[in-house]
Length: 181
Length: 181
Image (tube, rainbow over all chains, first blue to last red; front, side, top):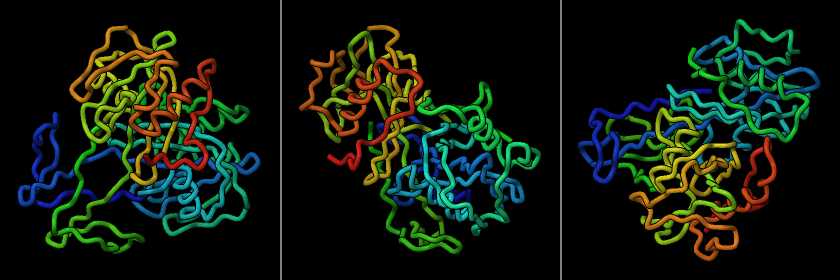
């Protein structure tokens, strides 16, 4: 999961454009309004038997910590396509998506995460460029002390909680948990 | 649902930034990378008894056509908060969100729509600034020939299909339907 650099140039100031009701970034040179929108992260808890795919991050933030294959949805991509792409990019994992496991919102960074439940099609996986290593972990082998983000922990717990269920409403943030580190 | 103007200024050209793997908009004056991300629309099918809230659009696109209360998620807002805000802004409707009804993806415009099933708390509704009028429609009264967008039709049908269900997986696009007008 890379973090795009979205700092605007020096000509941008915050002001309320005509007909709007909140501050936007407006370029004082050309009038361009740089709308800032929440970002969509797509990913998957990928299972094979009783094991789960995790990736050790090769990039900041949280380099060296374990995460799920997940990342920013690209333009003109469905959310399922994005989750499959990220599984391939980060773990060389071919996956079969089952259903939407959870929708998490990380308010502080305006991020909406759509996390699917998926099955690993082929047991061979390997680290993509953004991973130091990848692995298949049974529940008791998960490196809980080295998990990259709170929402990774949520997704693992939700996956475990729903493992015998199908056709369920997606889970959300744990109560009163904003997902900050 | 307003459409923000996101055309970049004249100094932006499409090129692949270092370390990236696809074209981005890069300002040739200051080097600022204008990442373009899919946008999140949040909304709700709002029911009261056997009736559903619809809003006649006062703005383009599809001015004069009927839609659900829905719009772009704002920064630092949860998806449920966004759906409640839009119901208030467009129909002065106070709603109680039940569960996620559907996740639709409109690929052509890189839009991910999270549509909730909700209940109208108070039967008094009225047009907000982006609506010409609002109304409560029984199924047989819905103005099917004057629906603003395909995804509004999908959401109404999905709401109808799931009306006796709870705890279900959210619905998606109808098969092979990209949601274009």
